[in-house]
Image 1 (cartoon, rainbow, N blue to C red):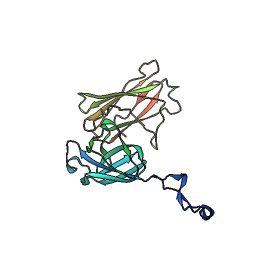
Image 2: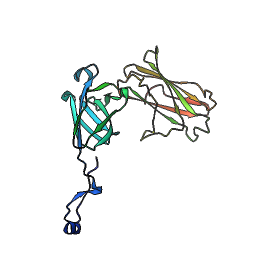
Image 3: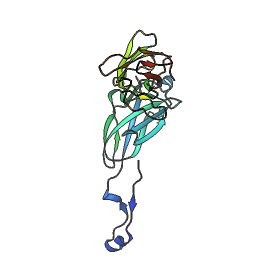
Image 4: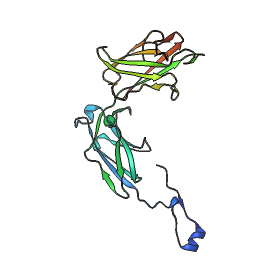
Length: 245
């Protein structure tokens, strides 16, 4: 949270007898938020490998961590008003293996100078795995190669059950140093304990399949962990190593 700015007009004090105050005349007191939490069906931290619990308000605008064994987390200095809250369970590697997002972010309303205690406790469940892709066209592009999107089908490790079928546009910009794009998983279907096969089919805008499907296989990554896959593409389709990066 940004520090509050203070000002004190020396001449103004002498003339009208006022002192220093918050810029903008905001006289509201900060509130507090107490978040009791439970892991799964009231499981203990060690059995689910959760070491730390982290709460984030408004996409990480305010965040605080505590030891999982504390059973609750308190945030002080919260600006009065409505906020979205997400609680995460982190393992020893700081991977967010559990979260409270099964029903979406929790909406709370913090009042001026008061403490809000969430009841019932926030429920954390296993976080889905994340599947991210990147593609390289060399000196070509999505348009010149007639590839409009990639159809992604994810399967259990033994190939017996489809977990997800999704699509991602070729025009989506990559993120960060690796330029990966996250495959949409709105239903949180990518179980990290089951995911083990992925098939990617380039598709034109017609739509028609471009080239052969690209297949990958790997060991189940575990809850909350990321699988990174790379494609090399031309106007004839795409190829991959068959294994995560």
